[in-house]
Length: 168
Image 1 (cartoon, helix red, strand yellow):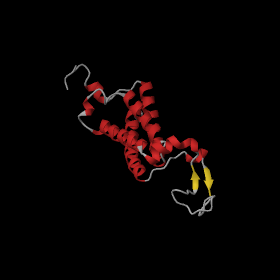
Image 2 (cartoon, rainbow, N blue to C red):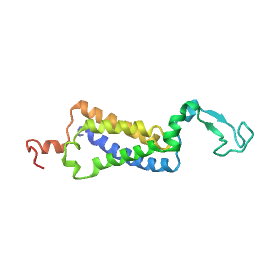
Image 3 (spheres, helix red, strand yellow):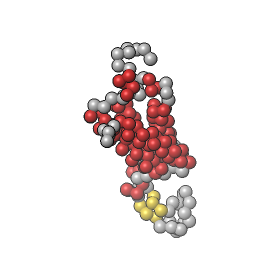
C-alpha cells in the first residue's frame, strides 16, 4: 500500500465543493433563503398567520426571521450579495484547479491560498440555505489542505520546477 497523499485528496474534494458551490449559488439566486432564520425566528402557523390573514409575502407563515436578522435578510434575500460572492469564489477556485496555464504558477502550488479561499467559501456558503452542503465539503477540503501543509507535502509540479528559476 502507498502513502496517503493529503493534498491530492483535498484537491478532489475542493473541486467537488467548488462545483457544488457554483450550483448552490445559482439556485440561491433563484430561490434566496437565509439558512439560520430558525435560530431567532418565530413559528407562524398556516394557512393563516397570527393576524388571521392568508399567507403571502406581506403576511408570512412558517418560520419568520427575527428583527435582529435584518442585515442577513437584506444581503441574502433582498439583494443576493452573499450568493454572488459565493459564485465568484467557486468559479475562481475551479479556475485555480482546472486551468492549465495557472497550474504552472506559484499560485497553484500554494496551500495557504487554497486554505484561505476555501475558508472564505465556507463563510459565505453557510449563510444561505442552498449552500450548506457546499460549506461542509469546503470545510473538509480546508482540513485536508491544512493537514497537507502541516505534514510538509509538496506539489509534484514544485519538485519538477526546482532549480528552473523564472523559466516556465
